[in-house]
Image (cartoon, rainbow, N blue to C red):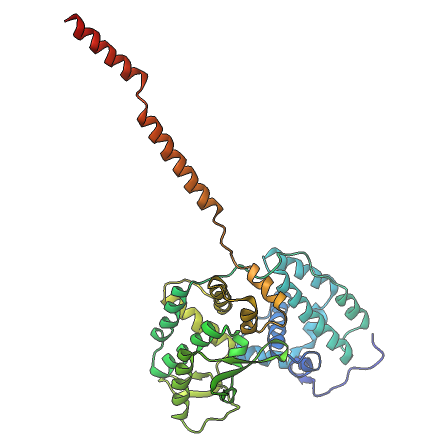
Length: 371
């Protein structure tokens, strides 16, 4: 055990079920990326569901759980053997290597924070850190790749599933931003009214991506119109705070809430619109993938696509594009070759008289001469 005694602090709270750990305030000291925070919260929630039988949570309930993680359950479940078995089980379920690596990082980081706080033995922390991810399918999940026609149907369907004018305006803006600027859910949820500006006569949007990288993206005319319509709806309810969430939840009847639209809410908008458009299930990241694929098919250079996707390196974009289902028309071309050869063979056979037919013609000639 570490030499110090665990103490009550701002990160440790006493509850009826014993002390709890406030991961929400401890994690920023390890990683500053909000995207990483949300991913770690999700995997730790999965860990508690799989090993302690706790129900899965989402949204505000998940945040509340991360603020008060039960230390008794954590000390009981966190072990190298359990982590190794859990990662293997995730691999058997078909999770990709990046997802498994992320799950491991979430649990190992939590363990290290508990060790630093004096709630876990140093030996446990070292053993957990030595657990390696099992082999799994490389790259991302297969997902969907929508064509431009399907994307247009999806954007139109976003307004059709709205129950009121404000909901239609918000849904249209959500899908327009995702289907033109290839925004991630986390980037979309983090937008603020103050992120829009005009630079050198060009309307641009400031986007905060992974690793706190900031990009300025030119707004297409259709997306700018959707943004202006939504901005007008916001201003109809009072002054707009430049640092408040741009995309908001809606109350029944269409009144706009002060609370921002969560990443789960964005997922729900995409799912409803995709089903309304007759596309089946479409995940938000499928839209990012579809934008990249459409630009590549249109002959756009990888440099331009990389800047739009906000990748740190063009090599990352090249790997990303290589995972898309590239055209492989060899089988179709082979079928056409076989069909042409079959037609040619039939034509040759039809131009040569059969032996039986020739014999019948000769017999008719003999009978005629005898007569």
